[in-house]
Amino acid sequence: MKISKEILNNGATLVLAPVEGVKSTSIFYFIKSGSRKENEKNNGIAHFIEHMMFKGTTKRPTALDISQEIDSIGAYFNAFTDRENTAYYVKTAGEHLGKALDVLSDMVLSSTFDGSEIEKEKGVIVEEIRMYKDNPSWHIGDIYESLIYQNSTLGLPIAGEENTVTSFNRQTFLDFYGANYGAENIILILVGNLENEKGKAKEFLNKFRAGTGTRENNPVPLQEKPRLILERRDVQQGQFHLGVPGYSFTHPDKFSLRLMSIILGGNMSSRLFSEVREKRGLAYSIHTTTEGLSDTGHVTTLAGVERSKIYDALKLILEEYQRIGDDATEEELQRAKDYYKGSFVISLEDTSRIATFLASQIFYQGDALSIEEILEKIEEVKLGDVKRVSKDIFKKEKLNLAVIGPYENREKFDKILEI
Image 1 (cartoon, rainbow, N blue to C red):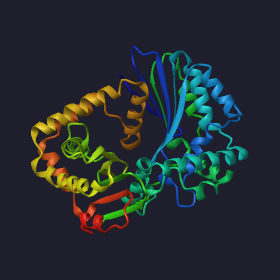
Image 2: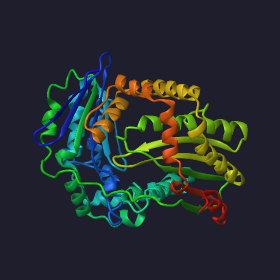
Image 3: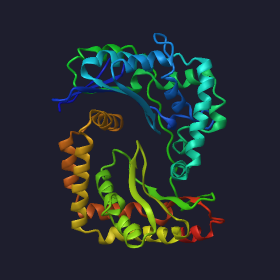
Image 4: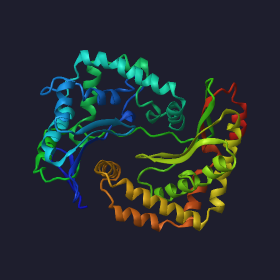
């Protein structure tokens, strides 16, 4: 796969990645802005703007006008908002690339933010917020992010809160869009069958205004002691996230960190899955994951456990956090490498996954490593790297624990964390 990247005169970035032998095309507009660019007053506006992009443009005044055009070519379109970025995408047959690109570009460039549509959509988003909060296995993620990214806009909930969302007016949308959707913040990526591209992408990108620049992120304060957040609910299962700050997307040890997390809890043969679920039956689901952002990240184990067994599960996880820096083995590392490489290659058989893979790399580091280069970096990781990284991040004062369940007080949790 040959990738070309061009920065246009207005500052927008165009990435073309033709893939031989496929008939589909994935088109992604990747915006360098998400909930991190908000504040407590306009929290949720990035996500709300994502919704409003589907509600009508100058050329296509209604949501039905937009969806009918996409449906008429059998395409699929959607969007997502994250903490540091927002994406709008469509997947279509290559022969309809021009139409799909025209509709998607029109949405991102010319949405009207109609006042009556904004008022209607407030109810939709309020119900979305309530849906997530009503599900402990979903809501736990939001309260954990508010803990580990404490005193930073990274800790704000992506969907916002009911009181913020319902307070927005049309000017709120225009202000945020104007500050964050300028050309310098736009990456347009086309992956797959590009026979019908013929310069169309550049024509649309050139329509974005220049000169807005990219706003700096506010830093995440350093953590100096363990943190706990406990939300009491009368549920049958205790949900928790237990983790520590990790590394940024561009950190030189990010691949070592990822392999360490796989050894810990990345799959069904990992230490935590074996110890917590298979041997002791303390949890149904348990998984360790990593997140790397522009200047920070985290390593976190998430689990749902029988409510009376949560304390035993937490102790076991903390024991493994301390052990892995001393007794990780070459065999475990090789299994983690093989797992990472296999799942990574499989994930990139879809043009949409390739697009997000390219977008994240270009967003965070300016250019994209090839698949082969990433596989080489995985192979370069040594056992000493995994142990060194483990000892670097797993420190008592860096622990963060978020819990949802029928727990009356925090004393037992404080004791486990040695707060």
